[in-house]
Image (cartoon, rainbow, N blue to C red; front, side):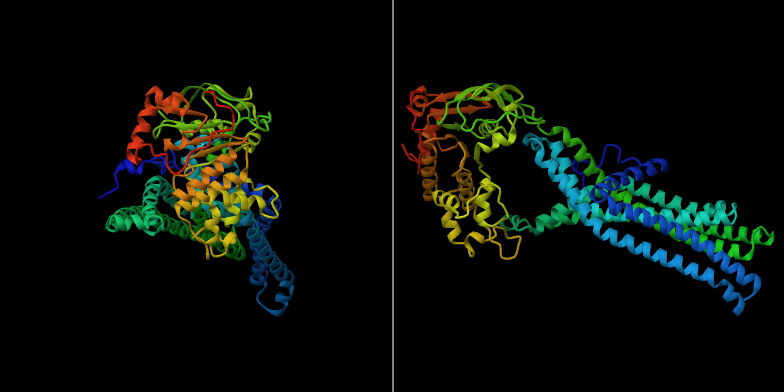
Length: 639
């Protein structure tokens, strides 16, 4: 079975809309320059001093090629004209010493380049990675819901960054080889102007063949990337720890292996076809280049016979042509490498350039130290690329120090609404205010500082148990771990920590030696502890007890009761029995608030909330309150 065309044209795998067309040679040269530009820019930013050293060293190295050839001519001329004896060797000694000095200069310049590259390459990777992460961390959360943004981000991370270091080395090699060719060409021109066209006659066929091979490679690149990506995906499934249980439970080993073989065989056939086409072009180019060199040597013989050149100059010309030919072969090889890597690095450059405008506009208003009245006024929100709005015409008010429950079926907009309250998303229409101040006007850092948010699927931080909780407010001074221990006890995370081999210092990741993994419920306890450690005046909990057992759930709700004494609590849950004491319940359906009120009021109304509540009580036992109930605020209830 062959991968169908649709699979090979998925946006994630495509390079660009024109990538299937074979460009002409001038276009290839322009693309090579475009490939070099972002690498050169990163070089200048990473270490301008080292970049200057490399450029100067390579210029001197290229000049040394010219000096070496010209000095060789002088030595040969003296020895061939006067004969080889002690006196002539003595007279040629200064030139020989100068020739040795130029050779030592070339060695020194190459050594300086190597040492500068050794220091520069890691700096380039670090800076490129840092720039990528600065952009990805600065953009709005909504950008991550945009398939185009997410596609560009992963192409930049998975392809651009991976090739940045090797592209740096390739760029230096291209520059070095170009100067070597130029140095040999200059020496030939100084020996006799007619030698330069002879050099072009010898070198152009091989250069044409290399560009032709690059053109074939470029035309095949989208399919190569598509098949490589598919093969890697199946290889990851076959080797990932997370996928191993389900593969075995579903007896899918043969399926995974057959899919891998399908993609791998097609990739192999594609690469063979591409390689054979490139090999034919290179063979033809080398044949023509050989004929060109033969013609060059014949022309040299004729120039020597006509006394346009002396024997020393002719000998040097042969050396120069061989030097230029070797340098050109190296130039073509590293140019192809840079060209290929440049295609990937262009993904990186495009992501950086296109993502900067999606950063949130600057705002300088400070969020209230303790949020009071939170008000939504006709708020609507679309996820990027979505056909239907996630929220539509939401108008509601949250009073200070209330416990608010957001309920509804999956996809009703509960989590989206909570993220709008937290300022993680900006509404497309309407406005959200805290104490009358529009959230758009508030500095994001100030707003985030007032909020603690525990999500249903928390991040599994590959850090120590201590850091996992302290990340809730990592800048807090807590030398005696008082805040840490309180948060761990109130969330029952202390029970998890006590079972770890190094307790608080245990690394929570199996990817490192000595690391430990946690169960889903244990990770949820750590996330709840992180939220408690943050100690913010507005608490948003999205299904915080979904993965917890009854005892841990009871502990979490006891903590919520404590928090609700002087904080605003937003609770998202499917378990309606646990929110009976909430000050206000908002029932969402298809992105709109269709019912609101206290638990008793909603039951009496006999609407969707009452219907869902009765369904849950039948499933879990008549009137079953569940293992715990969300707390009510100590505010007088009269809603």
